[in-house]
Image (cartoon, rainbow, N blue to C red; front, side, top):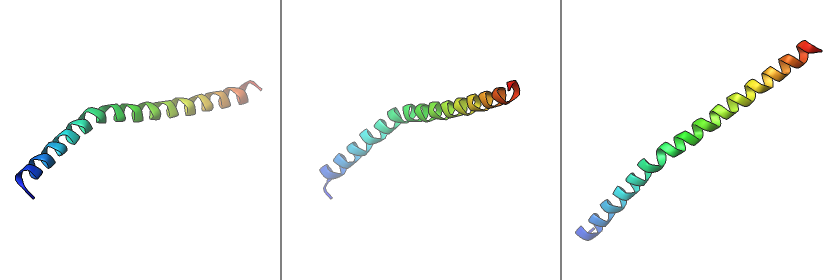
Length: 56
C-alpha cells in the first residue's frame, strides 16, 4: 500500500467517523421516540380496557 493509498484510506475513515458522529444522535432520538410511542399506546390500551370493564 502506497502513502497516497494510506492517506486516502485515513481520509475516508475520518469522513465516515464524522458522519457516524453526526447521524448517531438522530438515530438514538428516533429509537427513543419509537419506544415512548409504544409505551404510550400500551398505557392507552390498558386505560381503555380498565375503564371499559369498570363502567359496564
